[in-house]
Length: 98
Image 1 (cartoon, rainbow, N blue to C red):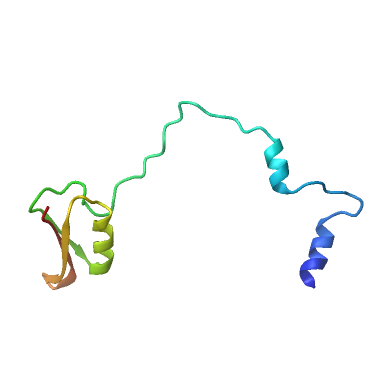
Image 2: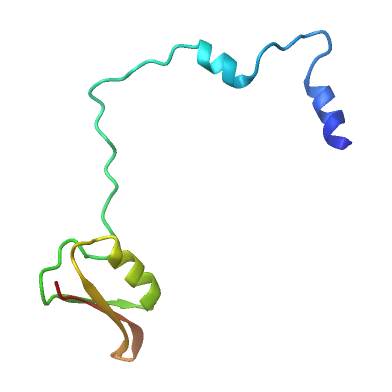
């Protein structure tokens, strides 16, 4: 009920609205911009792409499930993740093995 009252206050009486927003958008011409480079996504939090066979890294406070999900995005490279404690800090070590 309150929504209907707010809608009535927004729409001025006597103004007829024709067509939907989609219809009006289709009538407008959309311009094309050429030569615009795609945005750079930035540096990854973890160095999966820079790793070679036998390399590993330690992620303090990470979870095996979270890092395993990140590693799966970098296929066909293969990684294994293990929860460990290094220097009294719990975390996850990730190794590249293929």
